[in-house]
Length: 349
Image (cartoon, rainbow, N blue to C red; front, side, top):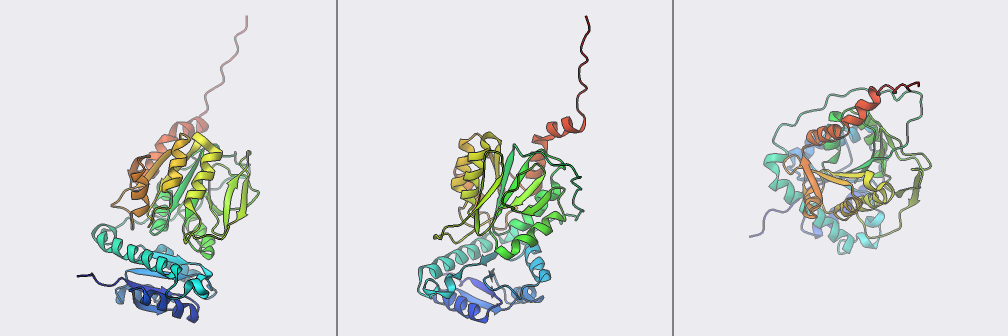
């Protein structure tokens, strides 16, 4: 017999959007247990209604205040899927349309994975990173990055990234590009939240800026990121396509692999789907390393699992263990910068 219908909570500022999304999900055999505008009581209500997934529409997000956004990003009980597509307003978003069916399938997969991982993903206590003030970067110009690691994440990613950055040793001579599936309006908030726990400068992408060491740059949602030969960041508009998730992790990985070669690396964190599975092959083909979050610590493990199936993932661990491993890898470089060897004196005849 078929199992229970996936239980979805819809959150949107637009009443029309809530109605559209509700019709789409109901016509695709999903149960909408909560359908409302964002509020401070949202998570409590979702738990009371036994929701399994939060579908958060960001198309018209003027009524999302910062505290509500922060509470959504900070929680680690209910997986979230962000909808920032205009498709629900047009023919593609009709209940019988392909877009609606694909959206429903993704939500059903998330709900199924949440149920299957419930004992390890939501019931085990998780350590909370202690917020620290961002490290002062000084007035000098940071050196351009030679080693660049891409942090790839989707559902459950913000929580894992906080723990990773909080555990990372300060001053590592590398830069990070963060490719997180998220709505456009969440980018600045995510950067501010990660800055609270990180010794690295976390900031949204700035076209024309040079990618520097000790930075975490968030890949844009509505543009594709690329780099010129000097490490200067370029951004171009995303072509309309069939991709539901943005930014495209595969695209970011391919661009970093092409520009930074052996200096490139990737870590695949919690997320649903297989975005990144092609991109990690590009990193490995250039001689870069690929790591992934382990199954037990993921909220949803599909993305790291799919990456592991490529056989290019050389190490898996919790976010904290991944941070420790990366810190150890660059520990010699940090020590050399902190304690440079004395210059050898020239002998006189």
